[in-house]
Length: 196
Image (cartoon, rainbow, N blue to C red; front, side, top):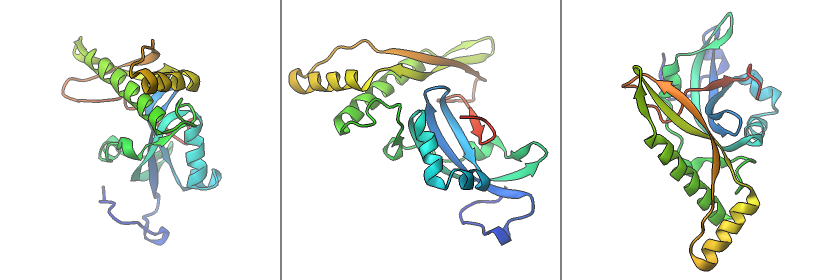
């Protein structure tokens, strides 16, 4: 695989090869996942803005990770899973808010509260990982049951009395991986050929 430190023009691309743009998002339907888009997907969505509006629709957060090279075969575009793994980890400072994030239309304080809650629950779930029949069982958040109104009331309580108590309900995803293959989230990759 060629190092992609530069952009390749259409005339320089080998026949049957293309670049795919890779996004990470936390979907409320499927949990954390990677999405890949080719040039046709981007044009069909009306550009990168259209892709990002689509990603925003059912997620808590999303971020563009980078570009990978793919080879066309009978089933569409293929690429080694190492290409996705080699992309940078999503930096929370660069995440864009999705519409299902209860802080979507709120201020920075509410965003910080929800992100803190999400990270705390994620850390709790990470502590639940255990070995089971030659595989590691692990858990990630799929969805937290919190409305913008509940988030706002927590923010108000923290502002006025400096403490708040709230029961947080969540849905989790259980997944497995082989020992020695440390994973913070399951590997779910969706291309444009999968429906949102």
